[in-house]
Image 1 (cartoon, protein in one colour):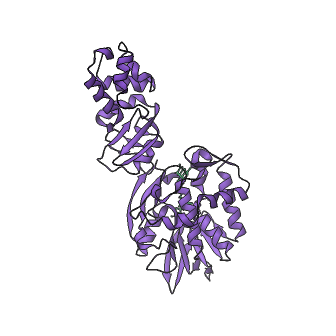
Image 2: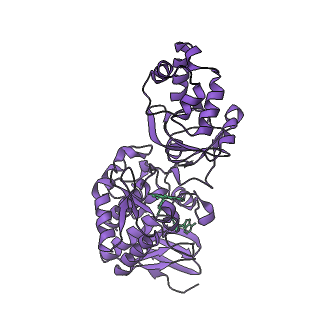
Image 3: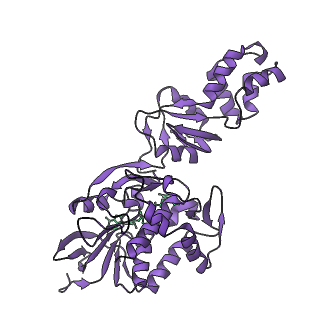
Length: 394
Ligand code: FDA
């Protein structure tokens, strides 16, 4: 171990999106910043994001698209560092981008460009980045934080927790942020996998035979609804609509899928008038993938010509098709979750600075904090915004 500790103005733990943004901006404000990460590469989640093209922000970013025990917490940071601010940075670096759908902005070429951009910004700020360094101890005394890592000790008056959440452990995600937060007296809101496929059992298992079928639905849980694609898998349900609703789902609750979001009430009885000799299966095949249409018609158990089925039964069938209820028996867990919901409680943090209220110099940013966005670039926008905000105070 080196004799004298190295001194910095700020130490950032975690070289993900939030940590790199924070370090770069603080460095460019003249701070001497050290970033430490145990992974062998910076920004690994950025690299695998958006199918390798990184959905780096969403132009419809708004606080109500984030889940947190305190729904107001994210307002300040999201308002001060906006998608347009990040886009301006992307454009300054000459990275070509496009809007895919629903305000989601992606790189034309590769997520690697976003990591390269953040590293270039860190370099412009003179930031020191240490990768493949295991953090063995973090202490606080006399107004300074000391971090022991790979045989060295670094100290600084400011420490930023940016080690994310435990989703996708195989690329180095850990619950380290929570342990550290608790060590320093911050509370942690129960972490749960979010933006995650849901698993089915019991009766719903029959849908397993439809693995690979995808269709546009409205997925509902309570008052929350998302209209996007759902994908039936061999374990249950996935696809954007399901990932979105999974963040709101709790064990034991049901979710409802509207398989025919474009059909207005009465469509089946109208179909009966128009084509009385068609079967329910045939009618459904006009709107849904064949295998799904067949499975749903089988479960609705209304055989024969539509003309021979009473209107009342057709109306019941319509109602079931517009709110097909599934009670998932679980999720595919942190191994498959795009993000973690919950995390370091915002109750102990200032929304203006991201600093701990009771402990000067301690900051928490990014996914480590109990702020979780919808699918579609919202989580990176939170990482950039919270990192940028903290950097203004280091
Ligand atoms: P992040 O997890 O990125 O970084 C934390 C860093 O801390 C990592 O580098 C890790 O190695 C390090 N670390 C962890 N434990 C440590 C320890 N004990 N010691 C030292 N270092 C440690 N979001 C979005 O907006 N658009 C998208 O397209 C996608 N796509 C996507 C795909 C997939 C497959 C996943 C898993 C996730 C997404 N996301 C996403 C979510 C997004 O990746 C996520 O919200 C951000 O990366 C969070 O950034 P952070 O910097 O907070 O954490």
